[in-house]
Length: 338
Image (cartoon, one colour):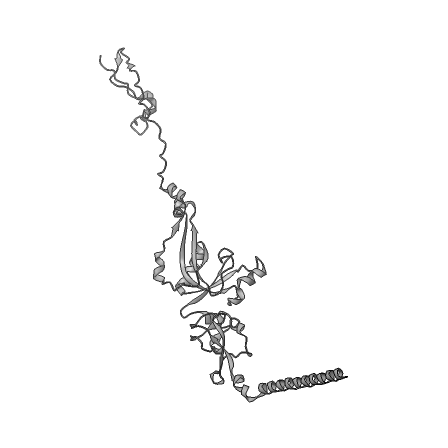
């Protein structure tokens, strides 16, 4: 009996302890709910995230994913036109063009950005004094479709002059434009919508562009149009890092590359002297003819007649009245005295 009473007492103690723990746990939950709903959390709710520049961005720059990010600021730090988290998505401004300079950490303003789907985007992309020129390209000319908006390219012209000139000078290649910016591929002005991954997913043929729009000065645009008529041009992609502006006056330093400069065989062939013309050996002089006998009998050797092929024709002298004499009327030949 004593053991049973002891068990009952211990069970009652455990029950009371369990009830106490439950009450304490419920109290802690109520305290947490009160803390969340308390006015002390009001300052955190007043902070907002704005879309800002992660680096210094000059005017006319195409925004990439690593150029912009969210920045938490107080209510006083939000300016009119700032892009707030929850109202816009960060991806909406990938490929947008800046209309003014932005400092690192500065909040972006919607009115200072032009999205790729805006009709003013092409005019906003162009730098002052530049022109936009679209040219038709194939797979080789567009670097197999890997040229994207925002890339910088060189334009290389290749000409074939045919058989009219020396074989070592029939083909020539030269760079006619340097450091030209690509602002559109086909009708896409957004580099993010023209990524290599999307092109690969679309298939091998569908991502090859048909036109490329380049930004250049007016004189450069004229050069490209003439180059397209002279021969075939290709776009050579330049690196994104270190592709500084190339002065127009420095572009004349590059020399054209001829076929003989590439092929040593053509160079040796062009330098070889021409073959000598075949000449006939000199013919021996004709043998002298034997002397003719005169009517008197002895040999007449004072005059030797030339070969018949070298004899000249002497027409008969004209008689009085303009009628030429016949051979029978010619005066008789005087005989030499013996």
